[in-house]
Amino acid sequence: MRHGLRFAYIGGACVVVVVVSLILLFSVFAIATQNYAIDVDPLKDNQNLFNTARVAVTNTGKLPLTNIIVNYGGSGTHAIEKLVSLSPGEKVLLSPPENSTLQSVTVTADHGLSVTKAYRIPIKIPGMMGS
Image (spheres, rainbow, N blue to C red):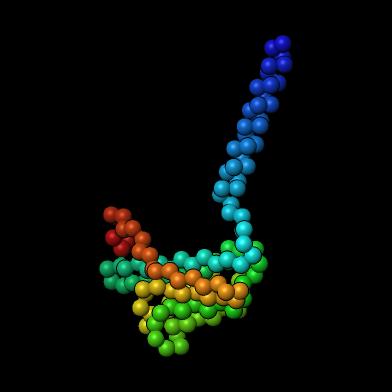
């Protein structure tokens, strides 16, 4: 009887470990649910002596994106950057040109994708560079 309970406890613990592992796996690694999707993360960091800005563009869909146009919101042809394609899961980091307003970024691509996001500013932590 005790021998059977020991196997039941071990089997139950194994099932719990497998279930918890699967939950963590699917929550940490996002699974693409749409064929065409894009994520845009514009960031500007105002330092004491200078400002830095970057725009991260990620293909979060299942299929490649084509004809991606990044509009930084400035004036002239330098305010627009074109990318030929992005593979699923691929991420590119772009630097806005100097004449950009750093207010918002609009990214468009084939298949009717269009995302506009405002630049976000990271939280300043005392003691860190730029605080």
